Image (tube, rainbow, N blue to C red; front, top):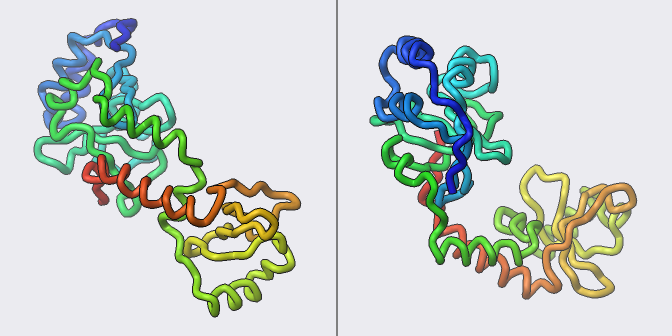
Length: 242
């Protein structure tokens, strides 16, 4: 779906933008600004929505008035959920990607949307295919907290004993048997002693902080992990790191 609510850009502002970027912006993008009045458009890949900036907002972004982002990217819109849609000017031709609004040259993860603006523009108004829709629905069925297990280190019996003493888990969270944690995390993965359910637990316990359920059993957690790895393979190729 495409929503057409915006007015087309002021030609003088487009010329200003072109001068500001020293003519490096894709011509297709400048034409898009000249002729498009799109307010929002579906796209068939994550994040599934593109809300374009008007030319004044793009100029403000280049001048550092909107977001703290690397100087090598130009923000051209958002995904409606906090993420930015950008042109990565380090690529030739500049590609379209989704990035976090708080990033740096060292830590930014880019999710490729189009190898060029022209390729990205062809996606506008299109919905995900059946395989992607099925993957989206399956992800909704798996507890969000289960994904934390993908990056966790599962401990040996000796490590469990060491970590329990080190973090005083028997004091703060005595209702759980700890089994794993992410490096430098303030949470651990624990199995409830009373019913065998698996939780992502704050190391300071649950008296004042909330634990998130991951699975009904350790076996189910491992099944979720296998599924999530397979689901991630569908679009992992789109991620690249600076």
